[in-house]
Length: 156
Length: 105
Image (tube, rainbow over all chains, first blue to last red; front, side, top):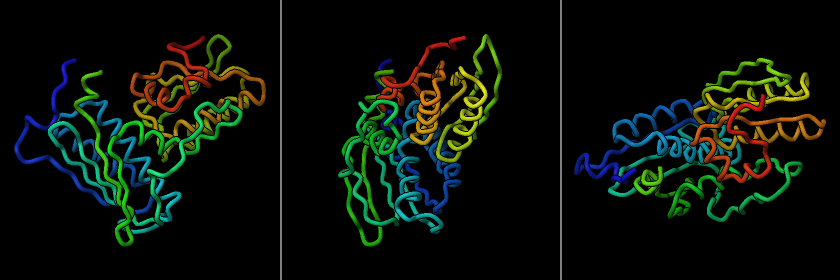
């Protein structure tokens, strides 16, 4: 399939969505709805929607289950912005300091008996996204990254 | 939301998994697969109706495969959609799980 820049042809004003979530796994429903709305309004592929959902779920669930965000109001916020050749994602959470970019990679060659699935979520984020960067901003972990939507559509 | 159903065909217990296997539904998926494995020597998870999987869903499948291996049973994963299969591939699970393009039974 020929690649096309999914956001460049629509408007000179980038399409964006911003959403804040409370510290509960049940907020995944709102996260999914937000991603669906963003992808529909920007005519993004189902594959891109799948991957944005996956990345955001992994980041959000990590913050809730391991970062101390469980039960917090407005525990995490994210924004998605269409750019000419990619989608910019900014994810912020109020969990304890955690630099995802420094997390060790899981051993994908472990035999089944030794596999627990730990670390897979961060691994998937790093596989799908590029230019992943972390900073601590006051009480917030801030991650910025790009989804190369147009490049991936070319491979479908 | 995840939808699970179970049927027996040619000696295989087939657990059909539809919808989303995410952090909100992974425990339900793992429980259904463990129940099937407790009652059957051969269990297949039919993923043809699975629209989405995250690492939480993968962990449920890994735990089911480990449980089957521990008890000498068989556990097969069948008919994943291309998007779901890509997640298996990125995770290296295609090397250690018994993944089929179609149901084994």
